[in-house]
Length: 276
Ligand SMILES: NC(=O)c1ccc[n+]([C@@H]2O[C@H](COP(=O)([O-])OP(=O)(O)OC[C@H]3O[C@@H](n4cnc5c(N)ncnc54)[C@H](O)[C@@H]3O)[C@@H](O)[C@H]2O)c1
Figure 1: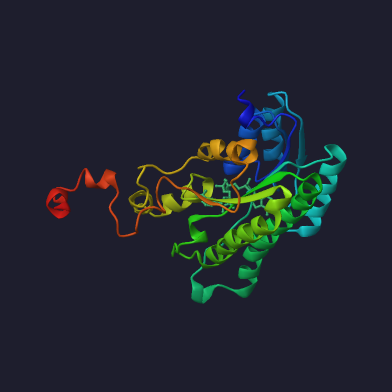
Figure 2: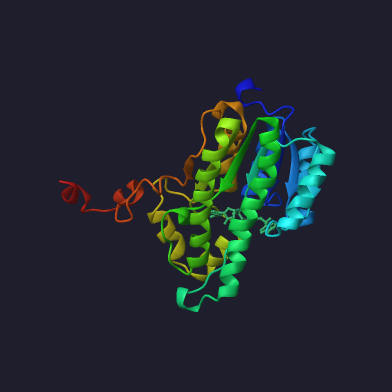
């Protein structure tokens, strides 16, 4: 194991650990030696991830915490204190959106999304951050989205408002905490396969093609795409990386929406003339 990326002796808290980006993050950290706190309201799913991690020889604590509830989050971190006595890394990943036309979005639904993605993510940062500040060291990876800085349409109004707040939260926390050893970064994925995305693509046969037109690397993301980034951000290899908004998007954010990705140009007959 390369010592620059070693997580031996570290304790990582990962939310959304039952599936998708959370599970891939937890497995990557465990492979580098970290002990894991696996948080997901899908308790049996988190337990299945724990079984995989225990087979790597790592210790686990599983919690069915709802990360939209700050009281439950406070309780979760008390359990972490009793079991491990420290927190070195937080993968702040779980959280739902809600799709609605802006003119039809109810304030109740808007509040629910903000509670889940903004207040919940902040409460996780605050509980983990207090412990990391006391230790003088720690790293937080918040998950934002393309919708943190660009608009998606298709009913994403509440989700985008929340994800925009997640990157500003990241910048503020980094600015306040970095000199005390606590780094805070935000990863902003483009479309990564998960059950809700699969369902939306099944409902609209044009959607996958439209997503791909925005992804120069020519494929949608897979949960495992976060593994290297999570290890980097958790390890000492990223000691001077903080306050960063890091796209994990196959090149989406780099390309203007009116641009044409290379994999489409291959099939555009007129490209040569257009380019001249
Ligand atoms: N997949 C994408 O395309 C994509 C893109 C950008 C951002 N994101 C964000 O990344 C995060 C994870 O996405 P994913 O694709 O892994 O999703 P996913 O649906 O595959 O997994 C999410 C996990 O989080 C858990 N969860 C959701 N809300 C919770 C809550 N309130 N308390 C506890 N657990 C909760 C679910 O049970 C599930 O196990 C989400 O916040 C999502 O908005 C995803």
